[in-house]
Length: 201
Length: 187
Length: 226
Image (cartoon, rainbow over all chains, first blue to last red; front, side, top):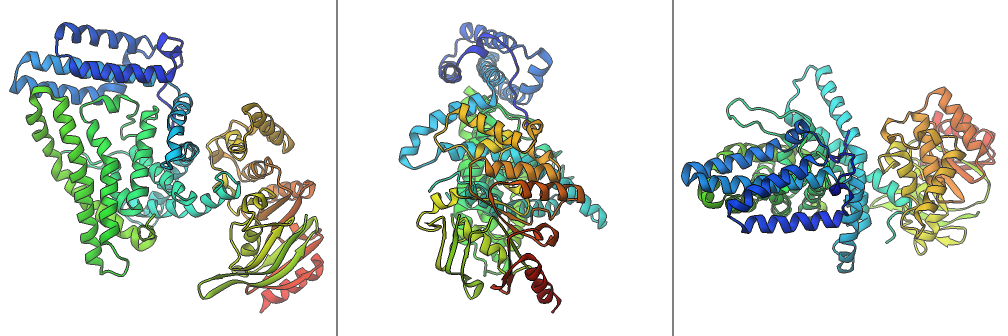
């Protein structure tokens, strides 16, 4: 039910280490936000579009994934056109679209578990300050993926129960039992985790 | 955090993901469809409290970042954080925290129903709308280049819809408090 | 392995879930019966430290469940009433490997132990399956595998046949009978514990009978009738 957005492949971006990709994205973001010269921004947009397509994602899927964010970019560009100038609109459009496409390219070439491994490595130094435990974070991510299908099925059951009792399926009368029934499982699940000795205090 | 807190945070995040999988609800009188998912920061704060609520939102953002399509409409991935509206999403975390903080201070189990309703509404409006906009609007303005003022002002069209969400969150939070109180445990 | 209760008591505020219990268990197959709310689950949870005694002590192989919590817990495994709730990670093999994490094992060691336990219970073909899609019997076997992979000496099962059909009931009965580990089973399924070494009957928070299966079950029937 929950599949990652990564695409199988062997493009240069696929082969790049996760940390490298994140540094690349971060650096590109800062540069793009500092530059307002269309002579750089237009080629930058073309380059990121090519990079995104080089992941082997295919035009249709590439567009489907980014259309919502690109739509907001378009609105922002439109505002610049209406209230300022075509030039400003183009600057904003190229800058933000390039950023969105580069980010989408990183996502398309990075598997969930590789990304999680990198996150775990990045937060491990924070453990010393007592903020967070890397093992707890990956446990939480695993729990979400584990329980989403079950909660989704429960939503269906609650909807059926509504119909069986001749009630209309209303957002509020669905939301409340869904939340209560789900969170009530927390005690048993927590106990099961403790019983298996995963978190040593 | 105890193991139970971690599980509560994860289960709440999972509920948010499920709400994103469901079709959005359109209320007759406003044009923008309401996704139950965007109730997230208000519900998280009002139901789980400040720490666990903000942790649940942070977990959802982590799932988005690592490339799971968990936002409504199957959106996900780093592109979400690169867009001009990323500030609103980031605001979820702090919004849930503030919402939880207010709810923890104001809501008592032995209060009258009406005071609980009002407390949850105040928490949802300040945390779930005020704080979220406080993060969303400057970011949007910054990303908008020269038209920063106009886009920030335009984003206020969502305010009526968000006020309705605060109202729904208030009703849901109070019903959950009555059925399975978690907020008073102050974690 | 000896499990020793010394005046172990559990009270929640004014309500006493378990009256002071003094008892030594060393048998290989121990059954526990009792009506709902009789204290039998509380007693079982005391053994692996999920519930702490409010007075008295419980030791497992000489380890105190409060003072030596982690070490004592390592000696016992627990199967919950609804084993779906104890499957923590999405894929069965991942879930089994979960119990081995945080134990300073290499990835290869973890994989090897996981494969071995799957094979032991004849469920290697389920390794990559999603846990929420497993059938009742498969879930129960998977849960047992996920608990035994860490090598506890005692396995506690809370109503293991409760939600199963007749065929899976028989499968779990056979599986439990074949376990080399010490076993403590809480059950309303009297057929399951008939062949055990010792059966405890709990009633209203007290140990009401402690006998051979046939005598204990007779005492239980008498208690349940009134």
